[in-house]
Length: 116
Image (cartoon, rainbow, N blue to C red; front, side, top):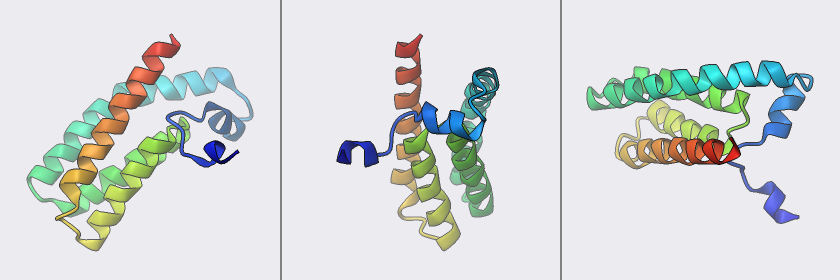
C-alpha cells in the first residue's frame, strides 16, 4: 500500500478526476504541455544562467502547475523545489534542483513514449 503514496511519473487517474474524466481534454492538455515544456525548460535554464531569480521563480511555478495538470507528480514536485529555493534565495541549491527538473522531464518523456 505504501508504494501508492510515492509520487508517480504520471498519475493520469488523478488528472482525469480533475477534468471530469474528459479523456479528450486530457489529451489536448498533454499535447500542449509536451510542445510547450521544452521551451519553458530552455527559458528556465536561461533565467538561471543570468541569475534572474524572479524569472526562475515564475517559470518553475508555471511548470509546477502545468505538470500537475497532466498528473506528472514527480516533475511537479521537482518544479516546486526549484520554486521554493528561488523564493528563499537558496542559489547554491538551484543547480542540482534544476537538474532534477530536467531528469524528471526526461523520465516523463521515456514513460510516455513507452505508452504509445
